Length: 65
Image (cartoon, rainbow, N blue to C red; front, side, top):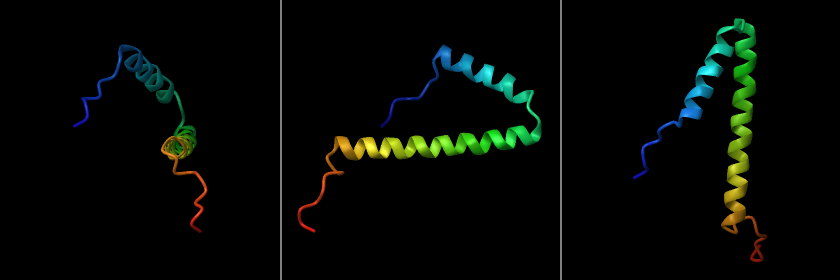
């Protein structure tokens, strides 16, 4: 199985800082921020997928086609 995922002190501090920033946002700002954050998460996911495909050699052209 996977090891437990505990946050470092730095990550905990960053969460607290983020929480403070979010609390001062208007509802509209928070909604816009969430959409942008989700977009970044999807872009990161695509980057990870491309990296893994490259590392595993799955992005090489197939000569059998």
